[in-house]
Image 1: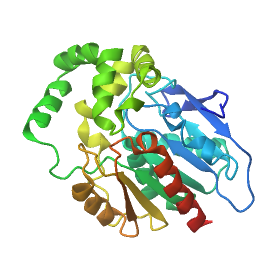
Image 2: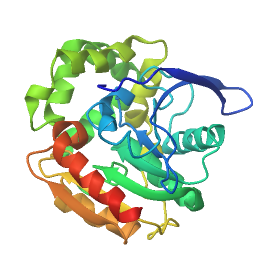
Image 3: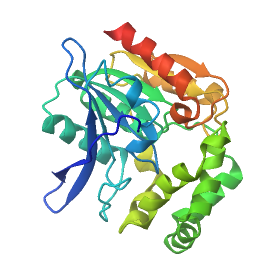
Image 4: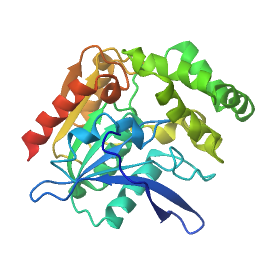
Length: 290
């Protein structure tokens, strides 16, 4: 990150039996009349995945970013991972920092977690900015993909596949399809995504979405959901996993107030893939809600 934050940690007691050490960073200073921003990374990522975004806004908002439990440098306990768990982490963090109203900027699984939190705690959310959110998939999963996730969901086969992909080559092959500008999938990014895979417990968190896919979906929320504040969808036009023309209408049933902005020449990791266009759109969004 060009304005490097310092790693900080807190111990999160998320059940009577379990606690986890959570990593976060903070940037900038509190600005009167402007809500702080909390950046939430996607599946397999970490707070550094926002390294081309946070510096552009640290002079106008207090900014926080954290590693979701099970990812990045946060602890990876053997527990049941879910959007509900991530939403509880958001709640715990806001309580820790005594934040009453926050702008949540989330990517993919982080965006789905933000929606889940906003549904249950709408009064604490000033605005939602959702970059290629996951959680609603429609009929986008083809037959072979369904078969693959069935295999990964099998503990024995899933463990073997995890071992095969939990290395720089496997990470590179996984990241490439999520970028339109594939030159950005460089050695630094690959190493960023590879290192947490070696942590104790990584197998549990990384395989959770395929082992228990319903725990990572938003289908059960009412349409529209309880959150009625400002919401914005920002999507990479070339996202083959979650194509905007199929997925955006589903999210607009959940959040009818959410306009959609599609960025050309960007795939699933839009905020990093096309960071200048994403930052420009985010700046416009922040101007509109201040």
